[in-house]
Length: 472
Image (cartoon, rainbow, N blue to C red):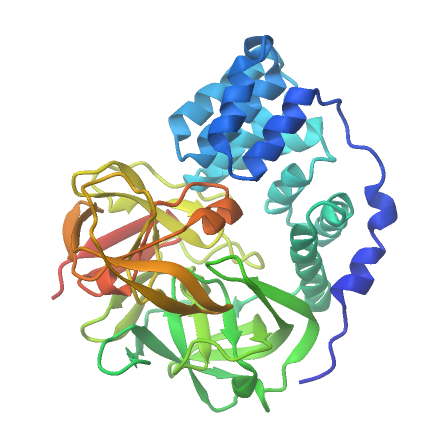
């Protein structure tokens, strides 16, 4: 690998002076305190503070904050009502338009989301959250560069992790110089990829491995992971791959720990015998992870296709959409909206590369569960409402950033998800607060490989659809 060209510490320091410029608007004490409580995950305290304010019902900022709290709780109808109430009080409330835009975006209504994000940005072009969301819809390279630089400048002192993520994106886009990222080079046609079982701890299957060749190198076996994005490999696998390293990187795990590494560009990535991408980001972690594999590949690498995963036959089928591939150069379905059709598979909510389904532990309340083929086990958040769950034993789970503690095996349970009832004989309970905080919404559980392998799984990133079908 070549030498790292950009350093977070050195590069981020150049944005500090810009970040000192004050943001638009004046916040009252209730706003500041409630937002800090929200950021710290203390949702009940934040909402009590807002509701106890004498000006709550006439303060657009507090109403928008209430909408953000309800969004975080996955109460999307309540969030929409609060955001609309804020706009009725003040039609120039940028955070309310941003909140409504987020609601449209997670439901794959991209045109509405773009319009609302544009309105929010026009009202407050110095809000880091609004800038980052608006950037997703900017296709002009120069505009994206300016937006990313502004996002870095406004977050470098208060949210270094967010600033570093924006810097990585900026450096990568400048390196590609307008070339499409992850461009499909092998033609928009059907593909079938033969997979093999991932069994790092004996005979129990923990996932599926995908054959991947980077820059024409030897075959690497990467865990097929719908809970990850892009390609992440360990240092040993990265040897002699001739990656063009462009920046440092950092990956945060389930428990909140982080591990460093480097971000590079692969000129070619071949999956299976025929499927090939060009100009792909590849992250190389500083330590070995994914025991028994060379790394992971996010299922969003195939987002231009309808994806069908059959664990029994160990095949990945990619079917082109009749409407054609995504807009050239973006890798995203900009301008394409999900159609509401009752006979479609279950509608998922999209949070970046995450797909979340409404599911419930039988006898309990519904919540959002992450569809995660890269997780060997199926888990529920600690404190999930439902029938009593007897704790059998504590266990240790290894993730990308090391061991994750505080995980307990619990009694078998039944899940109602995607129109089906599925049993889980060996579930676990764990703290999902950190992953919920990072995604900005309460995640009640993870549908891991232990459940997903019981069905064929069809994923449609264009429309945000997930179907669990019976095995053939």
